[in-house]
Structures are given as structure tokens and as C-alpha cells.
Length: 321
Ligand code: DTR
Ligand code: ZN
Ligand code: ZN
Image 1 (cartoon, protein in one colour):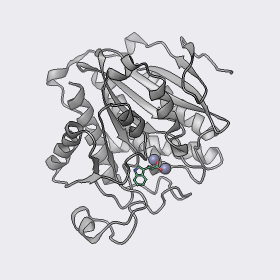
Image 2 (spheres, helix red, strand yellow; image 1 turned 90 degrees about the horizontal axis):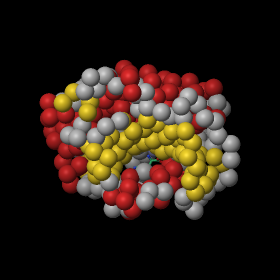
Image 3 (tube, protein in one colour; image 1 turned 90 degrees about the vertical axis):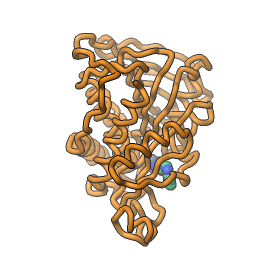
Image 4 (cartoon, helix red, strand yellow; image 1 turned 60 degrees about the vertical axis):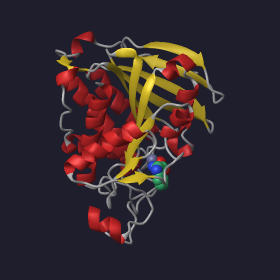
């Protein structure tokens, strides 16, 4: 199995899940890249610039356009998406690892980014699937989650944030094939390493054009953290019940890890009651371009993307302190 080693990257090959051997490519963290630490007790989450998040989405759109119109598992568009995210994180001082796996006869990749520092025995994770369906560029599903956690990770670096817990971010491959990448990651963890994960936050579709504000109702502490944020905004939320088992939090939940997350809606129809509290259009889907070629940069509601991005940063700061 071929792999390229870049910079001070080191490759560790380990056979793990039943899917295939998993190849790990890890860069060397650039110690100098981390700025002066900020005491975690005093740290408040920064605003996540929706303009920066949208700039990442524009890059993902350009990548899809240059690669046959999608960023699906096994495609050049997916690998280019991963390379884009990895380059930003390497430059910001993260220790990145590329996990390689095979599914449906094609090579897939997870990108794991560890922020140096924090208690290695208490890891807070935030993740999003980076792959699209083959029908389109997947800007809302799930460029939105991928771009928002990327910008949150970059905000951690800019702030020189040094929380009590260890922070780990993940971009999953082959979610659209059945959470293949995230399942491969969880299956590859020893029970000791699995028990070190204090929580996994999942963000899959957070910029839907006719948005709802749904909070995963799995772990109550994580759920309340997100609910408190939106209460502070004066935005009501609903429990996310349609997605149980349908995104990358499922393998973590099945392994006993506390999970939570945010969702702005897919092809389900917004009711009149929901439109009255959230705005938008009743009788229409939250995202009418779900799994379609029209899931492009125009298929995003900036307010939902902005609010959810800020909620992600709030939860990462609060749950890692
Ligand atoms: N984002 C979808 C999976 C998904 C997550 N929650 C829901 C709720 C209703 C429909 C689909 C989903 C995907 O990746 O296809
Ligand atoms: Zn999807
Ligand atoms: Zn998705």
C-alpha cells in the first residue's frame, strides 16, 4: 500500500478494523507555531468568523468543481479536500494524522488533528464527515460541519488556548457509505484509548438553507451546553431525533462515549410551528438540495452557519476547560 511521507511526517502502519489495514501518517508538531498560552479558566470562546467559514466552503466548492463536481469517497475531490484541511492545521501547529482505510474497493482517509497539550487521559473530540455524495459538491452536507470545526481549530491556535483536557478534531471519510471512516477509527482504538475520550461532538449539516436548530439529545451534559448557548441567543432549539444512528456520532455512542452535536435539517419538511419560531418557509424541506447536485455554496444559510459555528466554539471551550 503506497503512501507519501511529507515533512517530518512519520508513518505508522497498523492493521486494525476488519475493513483493511489502516495506515497512519503523522506530521511532527511545529513547537514554535503555538503562541503564548491562555489560562483556560479565564478563556472565553472567541467568535467564529462566518466569513472565514464561508471561505473554507468556497475552497471546497472549487475543489469539487475541479474534480468532476463532487468530493465523494475514493475521488480526487475527497483527497484534495483532506489535503486542504490538513495544510491549514499543520500550519497552525496541530499534530495531524492521516488514517487510510479501504471501503467498497476504494481508498478512504480520515484526518485526525491533535492540539498539543492538555490531559491525555481526558480527550474532547469534535468531528465532521468531509466526504460528499457522488451527486454533488456536498457544501452543506457536509462542508458546513467540516469548515466550522476547521475554523474552530484555527481559533484554538490563534488564541493559544491551553485547556485542561486534550483537544482532538477529526474529519471523517466515507460517512455517506455508512459511517465507514468513523467506525474504522473507533474500532481501531484500544479500550484504554477509547475510555480516554470524555466526549465526542458531531457536526453534520449545520448550514441548511431553510434551517432548523436541532440539538442532539444523547448526552444530557453536552445537550445542555448547546441549549444554554442558544438560550443566550434567544433562539429556541428542538431535540435532534431523526438522525439517531445516521451520522458519525453513532460509532462513538455505540462504544459508550458521551456524544452530542448540532443539526440544521435535511430533507424533512419544516412545519408552520417551526417556521414561526425559526423563520424560513413552512411546507418546504430544511435542505431541498440534500444529496443533490445543487448542494453548492449557494445552498447555505449564513445565519445558521454563523450561529452554529459560534455554538461549536462555545461548547469546545466549555467542555474542555
Ligand atoms: N447528514 C446526513 C445524515 C443525517 C444526520 N442527521 C439526519 C437527519 C435526517 C436525515 C439525514 C441525517 C448524511 O450525511 O447523509
Ligand atoms: Zn449525506
Ligand atoms: Zn452528512
